[in-house]
Length: 353
Image (cartoon, rainbow, N blue to C red; front, side):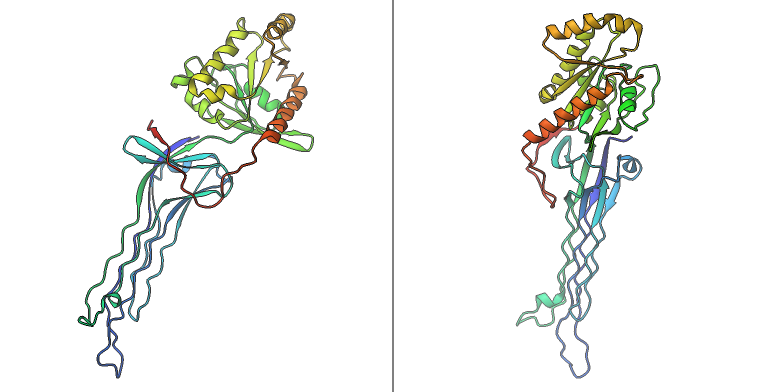
């Protein structure tokens, strides 16, 4: 799945104004009647939930709106060029690229939300505009203006309510399968999941979206392993399920190390609510350690959920608690939503990657 793409977008050129004079019977001295050119179409990027990835932009990198038509005689206006609408997944962040800098243009997180990327050029003026008392037969018209051209970076960050985080092979894919109809690849080797997988979890009459995101390793905030590929998608989640391997001899260190990676990537990531999940309690060696592991978390003042993603033991309690926390977060939310209309946010600059 393509998560990042760089493309070039152009607005349509304006049509040319024309030089024309009236040629009608019984009007021997017809004046200028050259019409104006039509404006070029503008280019927009719009969020569409039917699009799930940026794969389309892997091969197509240049886009241009339709240019306006030239004016005609009898003061006829040229037709305006059609606007260009480029569809991207919900959660796409749009940057204008200026050299090595990337200027934030829009964060498209809602269905139908769109942003103007490149304006179409204005149409040229026909010679009817240049008639004066001393020049009643002007042979002057102006050309249409070119449309804007911008290099644009599309950066996809999935929108999910809950993210599953953890080291490779702790059972994240199996847990996602246990609570939803998602069917991610499952195997006994690191980095089975190479791209995020989404599943819808049903709790009574309510649902929430759960994302299993590629495994972290130490140094993930520096981009090691699948670090940045994980962390970019975890940014939008409201809750993180921190899945730990019950067989790990250093389970508390595992939890602390991954939390440190979150904080080093972005401090606000470490502030997200977390639900600690100890997996693989179906294994005899883990069962024997449960009192010890429980005491470790109790000594830290943490509540841990003990589950088996394989047998689904403890999974329903985990799902219910996650849904409860989500409800509490939504009740405390500001309720503010990004506008659906075309907008240009105050630019925010970051260094290109």
